[in-house]
Image 1 (tube, rainbow, N blue to C red):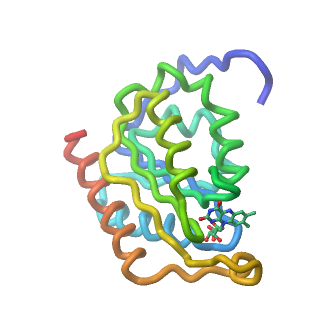
Image 2: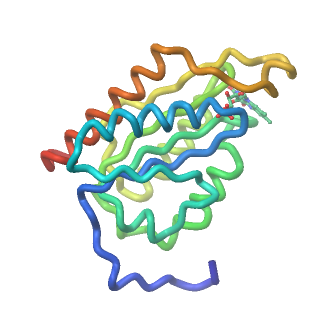
Length: 177
Ligand SMILES: Cc1cc2nc3c(=O)[nH]c(=O)nc-3n(C[C@H](O)[C@H](O)[C@H](O)COP(=O)(O)O)c2cc1C
């Protein structure tokens, strides 16, 4: 994206669109994102857009009626490519997203609080409205080998994520946020 303020006069908000943005390195966050999307798709009137952070742009953000952000914690904060998405869009979006609903899921080995704090600060800066308690899913990976291997998220966490997606989509459909 070029420097300078992006103009988006023609962009219309679609309050019936739920945007799910995620980043993953070993698959955990992706499974959680897919579970949220599955749940949200149960509401037929809501369009669900599932995007990897690398592919997400300011126009996606400005168009959607609500957001679920899903990312791993790495080195005590948001993973680099998730942070990169916010770095690319933060000031372009500032003052344009006020009051829009959002939810957060963090996938972490043993902690997750640093990434969660960082994400909540960004959402507060954007004046987003949190519609559910944040979820931190722990994969219990601590040793190097465990951290680097593919992750398989437990059924209960997938179920919780699916329910989050379903509740979010219902709320959007009923315009209750
Ligand atoms: C470089 C690196 C740093 C990490 N730092 C943390 C950390 O600070 N806290 C934590 O709880 N987990 C940490 N982890 C573990 C990941 O959060 C965990 O493996 C998670 O499942 C990754 O999500 P993903 O499967 O969606 O990529 C780290 C992993 C890597 C590769």
